[in-house]
Length: 178
Image 1 (tube, rainbow, N blue to C red):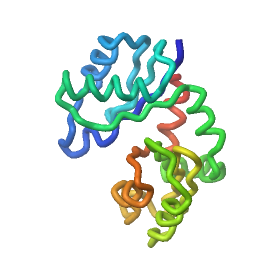
Image 2: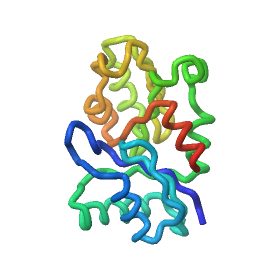
Image 3: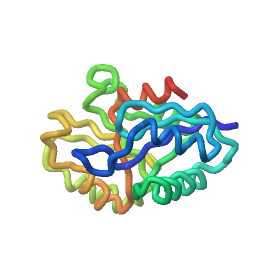
Image 4: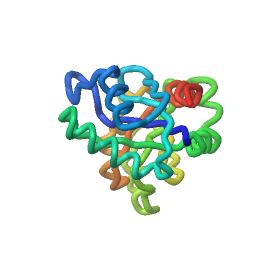
C-alpha cells in the first residue's frame, strides 16, 4: 500500500464548498482508503491505498465527493514520495526556515509550459517571488498573501492549470502525518 497526501481545492472558504473533516474521513474510508487522517479544516488528508496511480485516486475521490456529498471541487493527490520530493526541491530554503507562513507551495494538476510560467512571472506586480518546478509552484509572499494581487485566480489563469496552495507549515505537517 502507498501513502498519499490529498488536498481539496477551495473548500470551507467563507461558507463556500463547505465540508466537515469528519464527513471527508468517512467518505474516504467508505472508498476503501486506509489510515485516513485529516489536517485543519481546509481539506487536507493523508491515507493509504493500493491504488498505484495518484491521478486515478484523484478521479475516484472527486467523483465520490460530487456523488455522495454534492461537492464539486478539484482534488490534488501526491504519493508520500512525491511529497518528499516537493519538500526537497523547495528553491526557497531560507524563507522556509525564517518565514514559513509566507512561503506557499501551489500543487498543480498539470505541469505548465515555459510560456505560461513566463506569463505568471510577468503578472507579478508586488514583491512576490515565483519558482515553478514541474507540478508545483513555490511562491514567497514577502508582504503577506492577503495583500497580494498574485491570487489563485491569477496563478491558475497564467499557468493554464488548476491548483491549490498550502503554506510551508502545512506542507511540513502533512509530511509528518504521512
